[in-house]
Image (cartoon, rainbow, N blue to C red; front, side, top):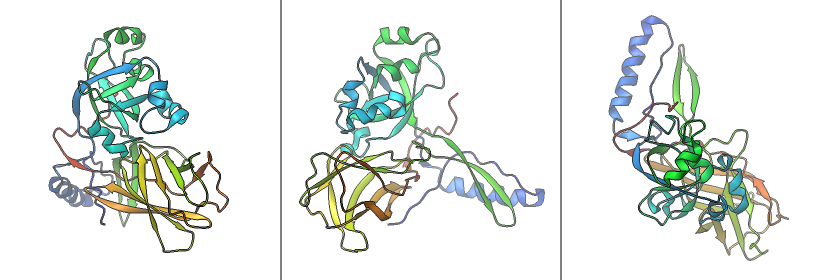
Length: 300
């Protein structure tokens, strides 16, 4: 599968004057051809809150107590279109309430950890995240409202990319849901039983993607066995290869998908339940969708 990663963020060009017009023209053509492609679609809805974060950490994604360490406890339950049968677990969003007298323009970042069955709001937030949308000192006031009008988009963090080929181009692009110095984690669930059953939970997935398929194989082997999504972020298989294990994933990227390979040893032959193993890879791809409006601004 081929990956397309055209971004609709603003471009800044730094180079010799006689080259500037050429590169600007190329950037204009690139952006014009992908006018309908967006990785920061702006959505309007409502949000409510849970009084206890434990309701979200014990949610449908299966993170358990590990959820409390995601986004500083700024957690969210999302409607089925965001939960995506579990593929949306771990997705990050920027969300802000639209009451400018009460709420900040920056809003806050939340991580999706649960399924919201209430179709009157796209999100139900932890009380900490709900209060974080408010202006300083007004957290208790927003709690009194219970439900607020909000707008949200997939979380974006500015990075800088430098490419050199007789010229230097500096461009801003966006990588959401970033876990600094941390690779995609593979946690072996307590329900796993050698040699007949393996259940793993994916943690710290970066980028703006969903894992939509997953395979496992013995290290050095090309005989891959597919894994199924059990629920939320948990994948399992009853066809467990012998020995040390490696994984590969299909993730959404651009308008298509791509393989991400953890080619080196991920689980040792003597893997233990309850342990989080380093996959050796991190996902930084950006998924695109067609929408209007596309909000490429930084919320401050």
